[in-house]
Every structure is written in structure tokens, then in C-alpha cells.
Image (cartoon, rainbow, N blue to C red; front, side, top):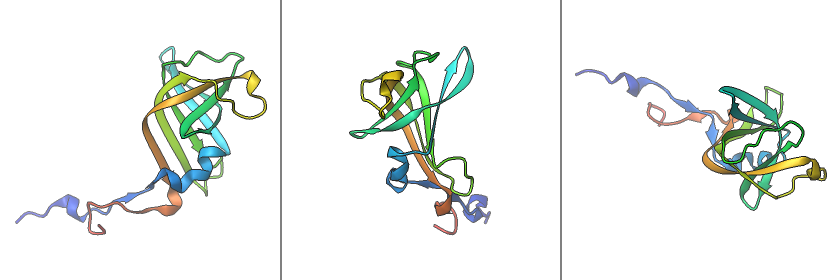
Length: 135
């Protein structure tokens, strides 16, 4: 009888429920947005948060491209300190919004995201993910 090689492979995951990184949803130390512009990936620092369960972000009005109805990826994490490694990624379609973010919102273009995929991670909670002997 042949052995199934995948049965002996241990699998781990860093993925967690979004509630496990809930503090980052509202007050992320760092937020960036990726999108495609002229066939190249562009990355901008943004302000991000949640409003009534909706992911929102804002970009400065100066020099910002119109992101309305474009695919974007919003990444919020706990900052540049690699020993923490917690965050959330939202991939979806940007929709022009009016929800304010912070006191200086008058200089920002605001968007919400119609999410297609949301992924939260926490490397401090690595654990078995099934499929192997540690199921």
C-alpha cells in the first residue's frame, strides 16, 4: 500500500479571524494601499479605519489618482516592527465615499471598499491548520 505523502506533511497557518486583530481595524499604526496604474503596481500610504462595519480609506487630494470602481488592496498592520507581525488585508473594489477620517479630512479623498477577500494574520498565533497529523 502506497503512503500518501501529504498525510505526513505538517501544515501551519498564521491566519486568524478578523476579530483577533480588531484593534488594527480602527487604529492601524500603518496603512497602505496598492493598485495598478499604467500597468505598474503603485503603493500609497493612506489613512484607514472602519465605519459601521465598512472598510474605509482616504488618500491625500494632491496628486492622487481616481480610484473609484478600481481594484485595490488595503493593508493595515501593526507597523514596521517585525517582531509583532499582525495585520489585515482587504482586496476589493474602491467606491467613492463621504465618511470622514480624522480631523484633517477636508484634504483627503475618501473611499469605501466593496470587499472580495479579507485576510487577517497574526504570526504570534501560528498553529496547525489541518491536513496533516496535527489535525
